[in-house]
Image (cartoon, rainbow, N blue to C red; front, side):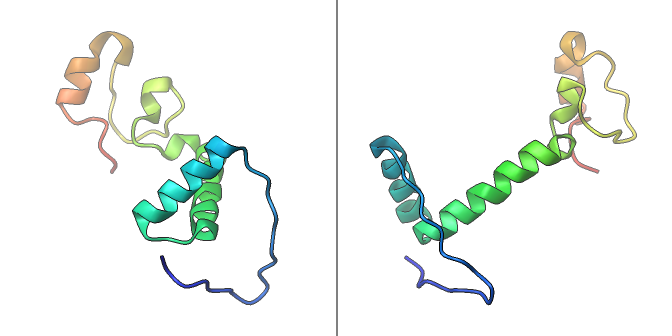
Length: 92
């Protein structure tokens, strides 16, 4: 586990987790070699990106929410094999 690093201006926060969530947090921290605080910080950033910038996900266009990547995937619901096979889902 990495040592705790406090950046200037950081504020301690207390959260209450149910047993299963605490187990998840501990397993992630151990598996990634990170502190529990760092796992929470990364999770917060990932959730923010997912909620605030959903069109940035490489497959977001399948749901009709992705930004224009300069390719016309056609109707992904009908032509998913062709579209994915041609690599239209790759980030530009």
